[in-house]
Amino acid sequence: WNLFISTQKGDVHLLNWSTLRRTLEGLSFAGGYSVEDILQHHFGVDRSPVNFTRFWRGMEAILQKHGANQRGVHLDLRTQQKVASLRCFRDAVLDDLSPLPGMRPAAYAALQLRKLYEHLHRDALRAGQPPVAAYWEEKLRSFQLHDQETVTDDEVANALLTWLGDMHQEHEELVSEEDEGCDASSSDEPEPERGRRWPVGGNPAST
Image 1 (tube, one colour):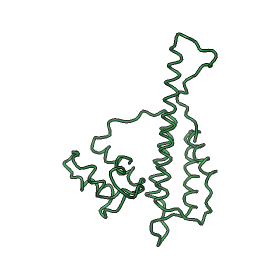
Image 2 (cartoon, rainbow, N blue to C red):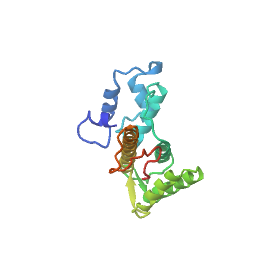
Image 3 (tube, rainbow, N blue to C red):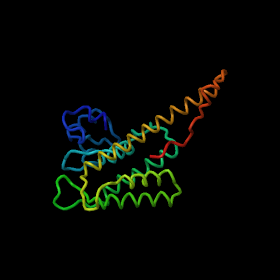
Image 4 (tube, rainbow, N blue to C red):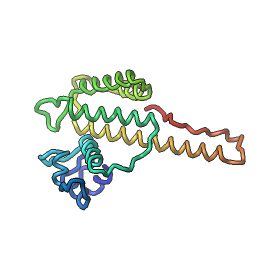
């Protein structure tokens, strides 16, 4: 997303169709599809600007389908579960929520979003994923909107981008702590005055 956004001027919350096409030009896709074919299939034929919610699902599908998603970031289990839950949130926004009629840009009633948080919280509890349940419980606690208030589609997309960024930062901090823990445990010189720094392992802080 940041790579695409950095190549266009102006709006940093929506990707222009021309930006998508220009950034993907020069790449080869399985099946001999053109860039325009790929974009229309995954982002629609109207060539309208794309927010992060649509971009994430569309680009993920493109990379998986055309064999370009071979490299990935190794995530600890809790972060994997949270990202998977955010995918469910993303897909529900795109497929299940009903935009309010006559609103431009598209908008949802806050009640719909609160119910979606509650649904994902229950799913996490049923799946035996306490960190994910705690994540959505915190989102519910911090949800300040009244049920009749509205949230635009783009505001939801920006929030989703922020949440993923926060998870990425937590993961980087976890890796850094693990590395520091390994360095400390392999040292021949104990440092009792500083205390022992244990690796966190697969337990990042809940958000």
